[in-house]
Length: 435
Image (tube, rainbow, N blue to C red; front, side, top):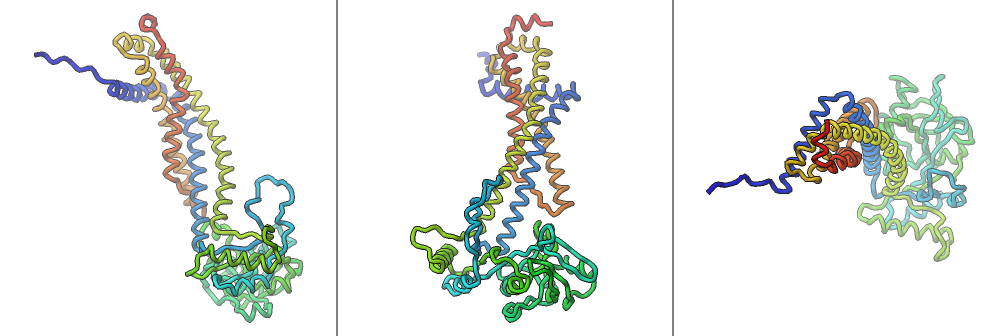
């Protein structure tokens, strides 16, 4: 009994069509390298932008998260500012601007709560005569834009640093508002060079009180993250000195809460909120005139702001994909015209419309997939260069790799749908007559 040749099933035909589409796409690229190269480049540029933005946002977010974890993820802040109301576009004076200041007396009361290990006041410093930060001078050298902070002697409980030289200021110096200061190692190097920093007198300009001479008592190494490398210059002095002698505005103060290790942070928050509402005489149902800022909220604000920029960059990158898609339409229409007789032969031999359609869609998708892979390589190369040459920890997430390749493939198949449908609708007799 003779055994006939078995016809391939539907899946087999589609697999064959896919293999044929890939082969023909590669032949088309080799036959028309310039035309195909422009299409691949257009898709590649769009994918490069997406991959690069994902790498930057992922790397910076990871650095923010590491900084939060190193400073104590269970710690939280009491502040006047309500981060949930901050918008990219100014919509007028926010409600929190009229809230009262967070005061030292409140921190002393909160510090005695059972769930709280320590409640510390912290103030930012600003030189009115400079664009930002404070100004530090020594021996004719003046450095502006120094990140200044006025703290309690226990500030190292929530800002872990390493003392390279000297010491931290002590409780007696804070109580007496002494002019002592702790500076970062980079600031010490730029002020004193290789010389000794401990015991040196520097002049700090911050606040309406003008400038005061301070004695350097400690030099610290900042944490290893993007923000430490970008800032570099940091100066920390007693908050009592800033309030009494530099006359800074207490409205800029915030309270840092460090809960006990064996206490849930939600319990600590509830106790802090209840204590502050009682001290401020807020009636039941009356809204808080302060805000609790958790570490997770900082990440949420970061995600909200970077999400807007990511959407903008996606819109810009879509221009590159659009250019590549238009190129796909042109190339595929030419390919359909050049292979009209081939299409007629295949249809005469039994190929269905869906098989012809599938073959040309695979060919278009293969073309843009190569563009996606090119863009992925370019984006990875640029991200690697940024991470190597700058403190920005660019890191490409796996979802960006998958998304870029899928996006490129579906762009090709979407734009290749019209040429593929045109090929599938051809009548076999008319196609065979084509010259």
